[in-house]
Length: 352
Image 1 (cartoon, rainbow, N blue to C red):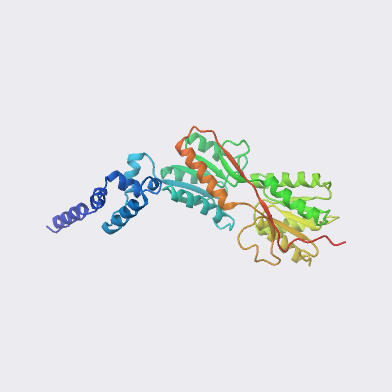
Image 2: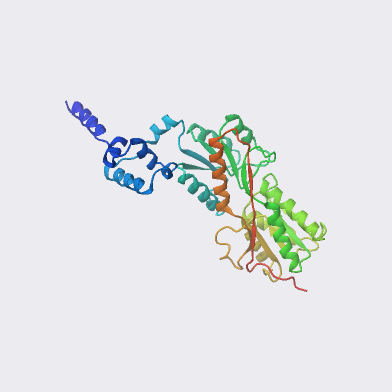
């Protein structure tokens, strides 16, 4: 008897849940109008005052869109997977913010996965696909990455952000890495530096390889020889890796008077190496970073760096993905954003 009463109560509770027809009846509109008004992606199709009235009625009744039911009707889950290289990297949140905000405005929610250990990307991609995501934004790919082929075989809309694959098989939104290096080198040359070192990022990643190539092209254009522009590569974008690479530069026969780092974490490692050698920045060695991640204006000295449009990059990637979802057969686009040089206290004229 008790079980029967509970079952009856459950049926009564379920039947009392407000429906889209209840909201429509309260507002005197068609249910399809309610559906559009409560959908971020379609809200613009409804007059603002009507949409506001419908939202107020839905709130009063306690009505919420059933995304699972909507997914069955549309064949889409409303979920987008984002694969991050390292969620703890302070440079990634602005990119993620740009992605998530743009997608949210179009009615999508994001699932962020931290790639963490190298080699886990494909497993994470498969897990996201298993959750029926409508598309993927990857910030993890290497230049020659099997994940790219895996995603193409899965026939799922995918775009890249901040990095690109060597063959350009997937649409991407990234900064102009070569232009960023040119800005840094030209700035240091204008300050009188003729021995400029480069702490390069990992060469299997597009940002590391392209920034190194951009640095080497820029120093050649400035008339500097390879001996005047030594390069030390790192295996990871970490502060400790930057320190070790800079230490190798400092023991060369002619140490550099300025160093361009492939990203800001590497540049902070250069600071550590300077301290270990008892050298001052910028008095003895000028330093330029890349990315303009949060808080580099608060270190001592504040870091001169190449600013990439991280939030704009995220928004561009989201736009590319939505276009891909709408038309999977569309030709892949590659958006290249222009960087800028932010001058702070870590660079100065070379001492005579």
